[in-house]
Length: 333
Image: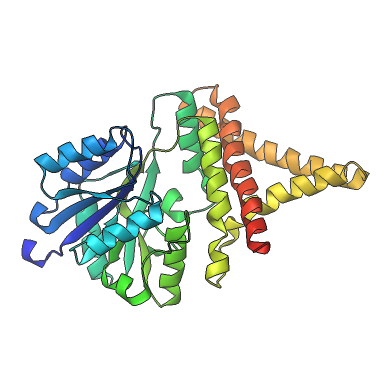
């Protein structure tokens, strides 16, 4: 069976990941994929913490792990540096903030070939990065339909399912020769834009429920808000580059926050606008509290009734405000 396995190049972009990169590399070392069919390329954005030292120590002990420099720091450049340097027939994009089941690479390689797909991935299990109530609230937010926005790679599927994108991605290398590399004009959403291009070219992207990835998000509400704000800025920018339709979920935070701002301004002059604003806020808070109560019951901890609405707020308002700034940049050129 080993002779039939493809050579896989793992590409890990990172910057200042001293707290997570070691755990990530451990889960790759523990993979049940033969190490003579594997290379791990850690593309570092010139970190000024202990990230480079940690990766260097791993590469000394495990020759299939290599540290490459990314002077431009951003993820899109890291992806392309790794792909250009790779030797594998398949490219596995992995995250420093993630951990992987032992059979992750084996299953992805198998399914990519068996289903004749161009990109495959698994279901993301969002776990708290620290054992604190705030970190848990953020993880629960991203694991819920209300917080994930219906993304199947976050909420899960019960069978192999065609999707628009997956977390990371396990690609045929030949696809990069066919449609090009990741767009270096995009600081974020470069994976979304690439997968849109892939699907427009007739490519197949599949999500497999038995492929498991663990992800560790931010640990403070402020960092969570900033992360969502930045995601929001870049969430719609691919529309300027590739003419295609996004799923409705990409627009909901933009419409929601825009409505609050517009009706908030109009409410100064109009009772009707004030009533609409109150209704929007009321139904949002009601939904947020009901879902928070479900988490309170599940976790048997009443404190989540106060923390979960804050997590949902950071998710929706951060993303929505960022989307407004992003769409403004598109419209103003």
